[in-house]
Length: 219
Image 1 (cartoon, helix red, strand yellow):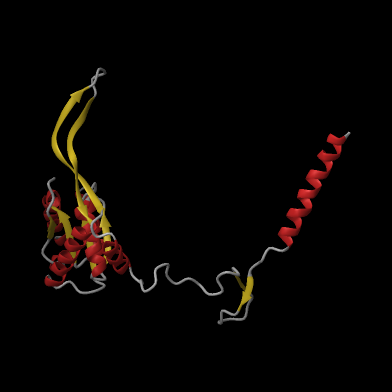
Image 2 (cartoon, rainbow, N blue to C red):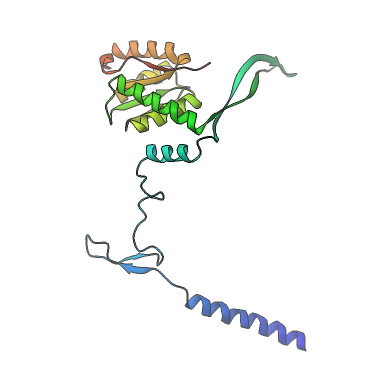
């Protein structure tokens, strides 16, 4: 009999406790946000909107610089260099490529930030102005990341072009974008030279592009 009483009372007690705590829970608070008349409610802990999670940081470039200063000697970018590649034939006759990679070679936050600043200075030296478009046509690797952060430091609008695009798609991209500066890996130099020549014969004004700024890669 006692077990039945406990089985009834325990759920009842917990129900009453949770109901009281729920009723006492603080809700959103009405706030005046200005503008057109209306009713706005915000979380009671934050009556004003959060503009940035980091005090004094308003741009991606500033956030990256702060991170590099805080973690200057820590690892940031790791790359495994290609040692060799070979083609193997499976039992069913299909071929696949096998690559041999070396150990990771790391760049610290400090080294990457130094490279980013140098790259940004190079953009300025080429005459690239703020808010002008930059296209990056390269494989995603450490040089790509460094180029991207350098563009952010110059307040440049970045357009990424997939490295897997063929000549026709690349020509179309160049025609549509009309970028000021084109950043590419050495392996993409031939593709760009061909695509730029084809595009210039159509509607693209090749004179609008700064001479190609090649990102040095081992590919």
